Structures are given as structure tokens and as C-alpha cells.
Image 1 (tube, rainbow, N blue to C red):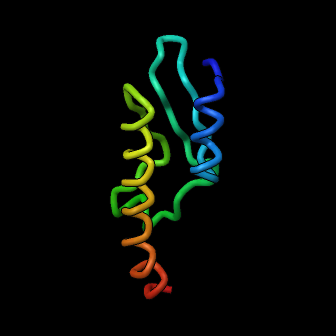
Image 2: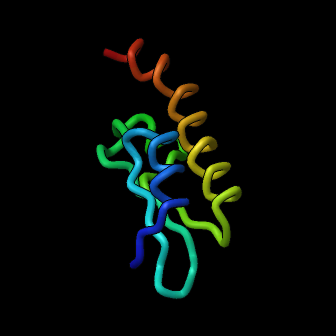
Image 3: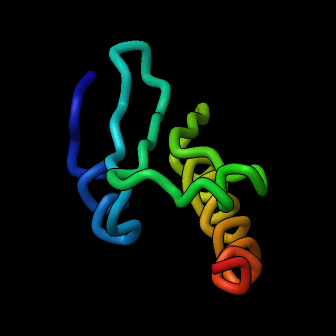
Length: 78
């Protein structure tokens, strides 16, 4: 996988996510720390991919949104 300035710029926006571009040009992002189990059970994925950076950013935001919705219920269960 290659790393370029565009990927570096997006990486600074999504702290905690490692963003990569494959040799084939596809974009991937992996969360550096796993989501809590309850968040994963709610449907959040630690790794996402997309054809372009806009869609990748949308995918990351979607995962973080799922996490935000799931976290309050996970905290109540403790």
C-alpha cells in the first residue's frame, strides 16, 4: 500500500483511524483501537474501504455514528 499527501491530510481529520491507499488505488481505513464489543454488536466495523476518499470519509463517519449511538446503551449495561 502507498501513502500520499492526500491520505495524510485526511488522516489528520480522522484521529484514531489509519488510512491507506492500496497499490490498486482503493482506499482503506482501520481503526487503531477496536470498538468495544457492544459497539461492534451494534454493527460498527473496525475496517472500511471505498473507491475514493469522499466515500471513505463517509464510511468512517458512519462507523463513528454507530459507535456514538451504541455507547450510551453499553454504558448503562455496566
